[in-house]
Length: 110
Image (cartoon, rainbow, N blue to C red):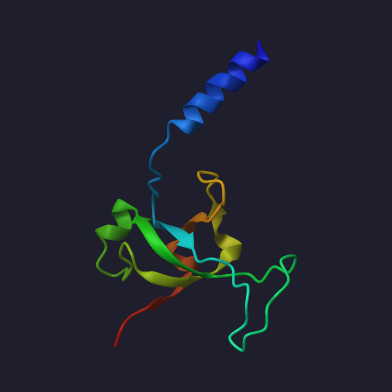
């Protein structure tokens, strides 16, 4: 009986194709963790340096329709990872749902 339920749950989760944030939230794909410092020092694989930059891949309708929130799809941003909710949608877990308040900066070209 449990194996049928597990199979059904697997089928339901594997059928998702998109993740749409709701409320004042955005979906961010975090940048790859750095394996080398700017000075050229190679870092061991077992050291984890938190990467808090990423690219917005989706915005909620509330964010999109609010001119006071300067966030758009494809923006490169700096965000607080403590408030980020990981999305177990891809094997590498690089997608996060982040509240607008946790996005602290947007990178813009001058």
